[in-house]
Image 1 (cartoon, rainbow, N blue to C red):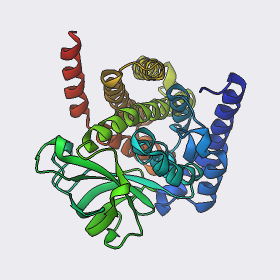
Image 2: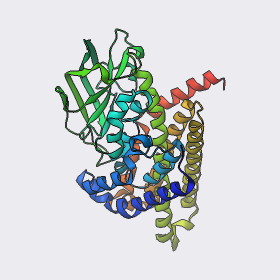
Image 3: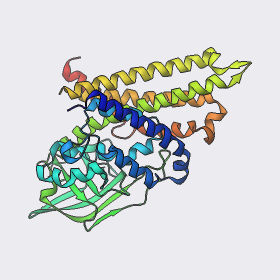
Length: 381
């Protein structure tokens, strides 16, 4: 159920102040240290950010999709690594449980996920498996009332600190998506190990690493849904996650535009502010128009999802469009700032690097295009 307007407006204002007063001043330090300060993480927990999408009965805020997207837009106005700290708990790390978990599974895990006591991760990608997510090679072999899981998962967000992984593994002889099942795998099980965090192009402070499973004995009670339903669960989780990521992209784009407006109004060339030069105005105009369109698409799709409509196509379109838009806006921002945009002092080059990932994770732009085309054909136009 949606929050009443007064309560939700207060939440938005609180998040906005937290981003402006607390997070933005720390951006350069997070980039340098490649880590989020623990006191900031504790403040995120106190604000309820780890439980945005989780039901109130489990200690979450139970936001609607439209409300969550509006919060995500606000959080997009700072370094994406901050949102990533709790993003897996809100999205891909928890939603398998929310959508397909038994009452017992939900009661065991969701309260601790919502409070931030534990961090979750979603383990689908493998060294040889990326966009073709139905081709996972990690195996789960039934052994009485347990499964034995073996394999390696790659580029797993928050793997370095996750306590619980939603792992996609092959349980059947079917080599396609129908042979994939989903499992809840606690970090402390024997045979679970985490690789060293990868060195990345951007989003410093948000870590990705390998998850290694060496004959890990997982109780059958930890399976999500029936055998063979893992791929279907993963796709439902990603459909929702793509809309959240699209909202974050809108927030980053709006932040970049605001930064460009401030800089172009102050910086002078040829005897007048940059903002008075028509070619600069054209870049600002294109950026603003695209950001407005992305925001409208995201919020309209979120409203449709809250009404129970099928939004597979619209979520893919929102993710495709918003992630491509923020890439173009970031590129224009570097151009507007000129040499200042290329050096670290202004933070523009950092955001330029940060946003590049949005076109890759939770489904590349090309995968979104395939989904949009497929769904358009199914709908007849």
